[in-house]
Length: 172
Image (cartoon, rainbow, N blue to C red; front, side):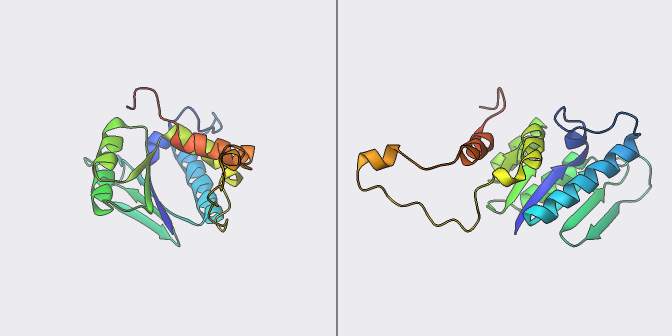
């Protein structure tokens, strides 16, 4: 099962994440968690969301099947917790980090963990069916060059791969 580590407030404050303007911070956060939980269940993902914590004197962890929410202790930053989680997952192909924070992205890349910007992840959540079928057979090796260049890839699959490999500006 694919595991996703999410920088909670980074995703919540992403321009690509839409939430009703009348909600307070707690309402927006609750909305984000509902969206993520639904998406994770639909896509078969284990999701961990990490938030900074300014209110409660102790670290808080909320667990349910395949969904973990962590509020760090006051004085601790979600970035530090995420970096610890990334180091634990070093080299794993089943883990991806969702954040547009450069230091989180660099840590993930340094430890061989996939990175998806918050904006790209929001787009993925809006079009979850764009992912290629999980049970698709492996591609056949073309016997001649004409078959190689006349593929039968759907527009949805092309868009999925473009979104997956698109780099943010200056991310080189």
